[in-house]
Length: 230
Image 1 (cartoon, rainbow, N blue to C red):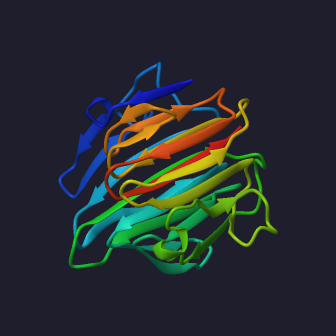
Image 2 (cartoon, helix red, strand yellow; image 1 turned 90 degrees about the horizontal axis):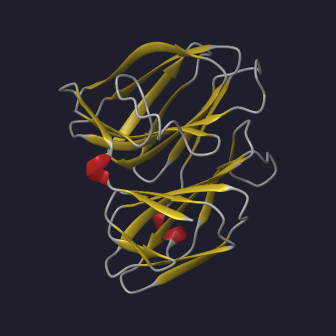
């Protein structure tokens, strides 16, 4: 099954400094048919104005992945961590038994990012944060693992049975990926693509389950972000 969730149909909140699109129910946006996808609970497509951001606020028992599309985000938390994550790179935070953090765009330009929340498999765990660079040229024409629940795979680690992958699809090319039909995949492309022959537009959500393999084709260069979750 492949379900397209058009960008225009997503929840929308414009706070001035933050222009957010919600793939799933979040804050004041509620749709009982879009409460999540498997263990993926939140996928927000955020545009954050220069010199603004999210002030300190708490979380617990959630795996939070930030994929920066353009610009950069600067993180600070109650554990003493601080770091800047730039375009194409990823940061993860396991909120565990509780953490307070802030996310600011300290740049002179707008920052765009995906904020993805995945239900934790380890409630009340010790909170943690990490970030890594992932040069886009290293994933040209193939998916690269960015984060997962496997601490030994060389990517960022989260406390969930999930994988976050990124790829750049060249115009006229294709990428194939084996899939477990019992799992829930969610894909967001930056440009129009075809997934197993099904058309999707830029920044649409593509919810996939029951498929043993995925073939992604596109006529224009596209950046792909995919989550594979239980």
